[in-house]
Length: 112
Length: 113
Image: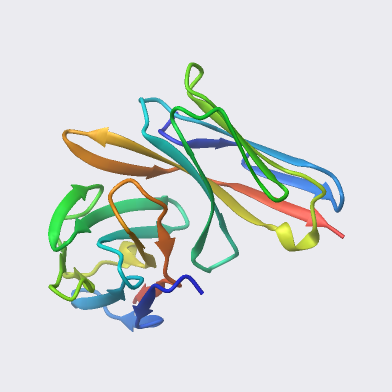
């Protein structure tokens, strides 16, 4: 158990819908990272927050957005969902900005 | 090749043998990390090696880093069936004033009992 929690575990929705994925980092960790893992794209870094502020941006679509709240939990919002958004979405946390990342169990999103 | 590309893509060995996986990257890095992932599960951090380090050990794991060749290797000695998983390297580099972490495509390791 990494100490990072993600909810929900599974999510099935339809194209065009919007979903919110939630992540609670390990106690004391200030950085939260979001990744998307699909069969054809591998593990893709989406975005990183550090202590509430956006720190780095990867291959995140404009339809996706994220934020980190004062209690350090983070949410990833996916809107206007497409079939290709079906993937595993992982959240990771670390104490700082260049430290070991601890991954949550992931949210499996299926867009029908 | 993309930043953080592992080689081989897949590896199948007998229990007890050693497994070696390689990772190549393109840009200067701050550190490089190796992760393991069991099918459909979250990634588990194995080891972090900083750019000024050349070798690191953790149990049956040995990681080397050659910054001149922009490559790293992960050696698992005396493999066990439970080592069957995908292994990813991740590079941590500065990008436009920010830190950017890039994962490779992974090596699928199968250890046959």
